[in-house]
Image: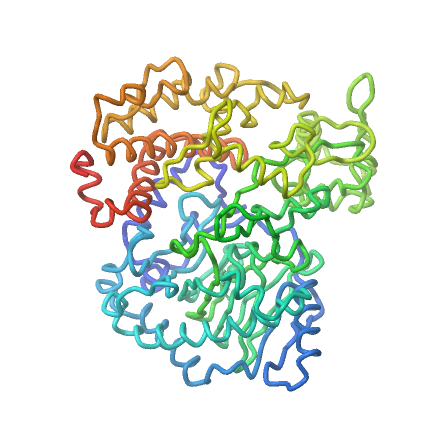
Length: 639
Ligand SMILES: O=C(O)CCC(=O)C(=O)O
Ligand SMILES: [Fe+2]
């Protein structure tokens, strides 16, 4: 049995750090000729099977004169697979081959040269590292990458690595042109004017990623790239001849074999954006609402594809052959301060699902009592069920005397592990309020719980216009998603355990997931909990901004109500940003404990607050433009 993350004897964080500090990436391990994978790379077995029959990923000929049929093919592929390939796309083969070679050369450089680019600081013109989520993912992947934001504002060429700079620029320019063509076709596929998506500026921001998947000694134990969906609008992927990319189609992994001359195109989360029908269960995939706001930032919302186009899960297998090289270009708005006409609102936690009898939800296959489907958490047990497609109502019912389970196993479960797993599932079910009748989605920002774009806009206005109750901060240095979190904390509407219980959600206990000592209210979590006090202490070791002994949430920011004592506006803004970052980082850290079982580390919170606020001040405030990381760390008062 391979070692996994829940083996407490091993200091995973220390191993991750040691690996990261080599700055040599996975390539360094492969070059050293290691035979056995370090345990940080070992993944849990994947529950979904690999498809036994090859499934062709459609190839769309962009040179075809029959536009209607091209649009139709793209529509069909984008609505089902979320993936297609394009040929005759206008990018010369020489440019494609050139950029793959350039990326290969980058990763082949001497380790000392590579090290100079190795960083986790996203403000650098070129970021090179192994596993962007090294410290947060359950297992590291056998991949190194570098990336740059090539549009709307590319870095000065001299900041890009010499071995691939020209190719990176040339290829990105070509992808930008292709992007306009693709967004035109996608607009038509959505029955909109050809220019619709381009006019919304979806084609304006581009990130270039150069991935390298070195030869792996034990590919069956790890992944080249873990399963994920792409965050942005649209991805243009160029892979070399080795292969390994797979997509999840009907709960099977299907290969996307390399096709010479073709590019792989896939829909990202931001183009899917399902919000208008939150009752629809695919909502669990959609993490954001994209509101298109007209020029005065007060127009009506328009949702882009409203769940028509699919952002589909994919992964990359590790391989004994290698290194495999790929170039992924993402059109996205999260890049740079692209345009102020978009507001991307994170919807995590703004919807909560109120379960009915569970008649329409698959017990094993859909997300309902955990952050993943039970099939992913308990694949062995799911395989033992005589009907893996059963609904929640088939397996569990709420009665006056509590929950009644109706299991239907192929054979009697064995004592020991299997019985234990059944107990664990039953415990999870106990935490979820199973009711009667239909499922409902409760929209947190509306008192009736009903979602509409209008209610979202109203809530946004409510946050920004002068009315009673807490208002959303006007501090422009702070991103909206962060301000929403602190606004919700101030109006006591974050789903802490106490608030969930108040809303009738039956939880096992009401204890704070961090200290496990006091009930988790907003006030406890952000103000009273010793763990978050420690985080404020750690932040104060750098810059004394937050009170550790406050009695109320709005007493945390030191000096906030004594404006006269601090007449430096810049400092006031920066300190206020730290307050928002603190709330946001605590909530994020708390959710990681609850949903991913990670531990809460006050020092990491302090680091996150320090680095996030640095980027906000630097990128979002005119006065922060020339701020250096060193100044921010050593002498923030010098702002
Ligand atoms: O390397 C590949 O084939 C896929 C990369 C990918 O999925 C990504 O960068 O998001
Ligand atoms: Fe991807």
